[in-house]
Image 1 (cartoon, rainbow, N blue to C red):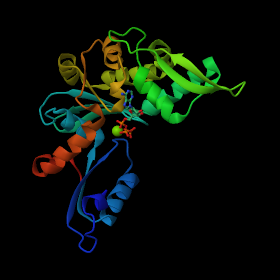
Image 2 (tube, rainbow, N blue to C red; image 1 turned 60 degrees about the horizontal axis):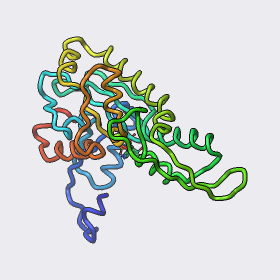
Image 3 (cartoon, rainbow, N blue to C red; image 1 turned 60 degrees about the vertical axis):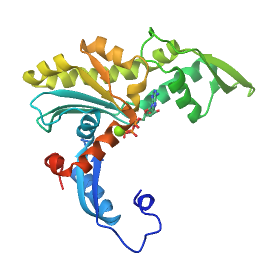
Length: 255
Ligand SMILES: Nc1ncnc2c1ncn2[C@@H]1O[C@H](COP(=O)(O)OP(=O)(O)OP(=O)(O)O)[C@@H](O)[C@H]1O
Ligand SMILES: [Mg+2]
């Protein structure tokens, strides 16, 4: 990354200031390792910001206000649920069920039904093309043709996958995320949950793009759910804003 910013100017190491986002469940040893490698790459000043905080800033939430906001970041490896108020993370839950697990679910269910297999990139494509969190959608995607190979005969064949099948395949994993959300809501101090009941929940991360996930979480929690604009980049955008406004946001970060 650093070389990409400064190609050809290897002789001078500029005084870099870096803001790096870290998962909120990270250990002190891991933080140290992040800092050390940044310094090794030429950073003179390193600040670490927790991902849910960065996501909140990226979404455009005023993180300093005395109001509770719930952010759910459904990434590849982990789903992170955090309540933010007064510039701090008040409560935080992490589970290792997210987009990659969804992709696995699609493989195991579809492969079992059809005795076909298809390569990983196509599974992810399938999730994006016909992925759904609910079996009833307002704007359902068309059925999707997947080419694979019959495991018994070895002959290539094509199967059609519907969004309903995908929704069924993902049901268990999504339920786990819902459970974590409910337990985070339970653990939230009452004065902050009152705010969340008013403003609702914000979704970020690539998993937020799954069709109907916002509606499903909204039905489960009885709260309004908003998908952030460009959810895949919310964390990166927020980290960039923190870097540009370092004086304002420095109190959120640790050196
Ligand atoms: N349109 C889409 N529908 C469903 N899932 C999607 C879509 N686009 C991307 N994803 C999934 O989102 C995940 C990546 O999201 P993101 O970039 O937020 O994760 P990450 O930040 O790299 O992971 P982590 O936060 O766990 O470290 C992948 O599993 C990807 O397949
Ligand atoms: Mg992430």
